[in-house]
Amino acid sequence: MHAIERRTPLLSHRPYLFILLGQLISELGAALGTMANSWLLYQATGSQVAVGEMWLLYFLPSLAVQLLAGPYLDRLDNKRVIVFSQWMRSAAFCFSFLFLTVHPEQLWPVYVASLLNGLIQPLYVPSSQSLLPRIVPKEQLLQANSYLDSVLRVVMIMGPPLGGAIVATVGGAPVLAIIAVSYALSGTLLMLCPYTPPLHREASQRWVVMFRAGLRVFAEKPALIWLSMYAAIVQFAVGVTLVLNLPFVVDELLGTSLHVGIFLAGYPLGYLFGSLLVPHFLIHHKQMVMFGSLVIGGASFLALGFVHSFSLAVAIEIFAGLAAPFFQIHCLSLYQLSVPQTLMGRVLSVRLLIIRVTMPLGVWLGGTIGETVGVRLLFMAIGTLVVVCALPGLFFSKIWQK
Image 1 (cartoon, rainbow, N blue to C red):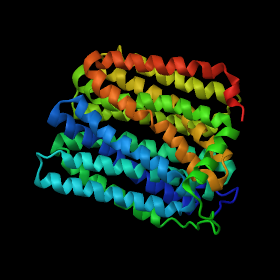
Image 2: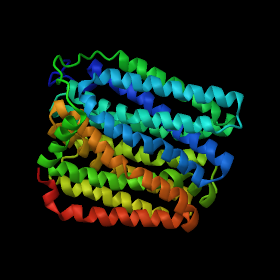
Image 3: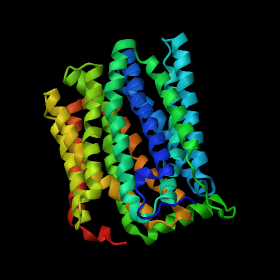
């Protein structure tokens, strides 16, 4: 297995660089895809429900894959799984682009691409997170996660404005071709990553046995389950905003597709600077800092409910992004440091299942209730929920016990 010498800089290590570049290009495709698919549906239907249905089609079937595939990921080569995932995504968006070029009035290819992308995501994310501890020593994991998050946020900053500009110029379908190329190139770079898989793998076991082994890790380390529950609350709020962001900018702030792109870039821009600060920010009270970042995130949703200035709304998103990595990066690093490598795939899959199961509920809420109660009121409601849930975490020290 390739390992980094302790004094070797991360950015000089080839396996880590290939992962960094591969995921960077992948996130460019994901950022463009979010913008293009949402815009195509909203412009064709004018309905938040249609956008919500697309996201539900992405999330709901993927939960079943997450549950069933998780235990088997520890028996597969992580590198091959993520390469396969990227190439399958490329094929899905390529099909969507080609069909919409011939039949632009049809919308079902957008739903198909969203469905296939959702089915692949449960394989890609745990495998990519499990691969990193195999090539990076534990004392450099926090820095490695921070660098990776920083680079990915750069792409997320560029993606929405770029997607908004392309959509405004030539329409949404051409963006789908760029997405297909991005995923194909990402898969190729990850395939070239010089990584040697472990020589010994687990003997074949029943799914139930493997799944229980993953659950025992949570029973032995209750802090992990608490952190996952808090992350699930955040993902519920994110699910709501997936549907609300576009109508908020277009209808409430009277913006265009370019304004939507700029607004969506605000959060990752703040996250970029926050993730660069994390490894250099000496934290003696991780609990206070991590849960403090969640309180700030909830307060940002509350603030958006009152804002009528586009510039101020973008500034709020940047500030929320600046605080977010102090929870997210430390949370992921704690998992990677606490979980045995042989159980990493299934434990991270269970974590992702806990987190993602709340997002479809948020998407449904944003798509249905949002049109009834209004975008602003719903922003204020989810902001209040996040703040109220996060405040006890600042002081309840038992959740920090391993």
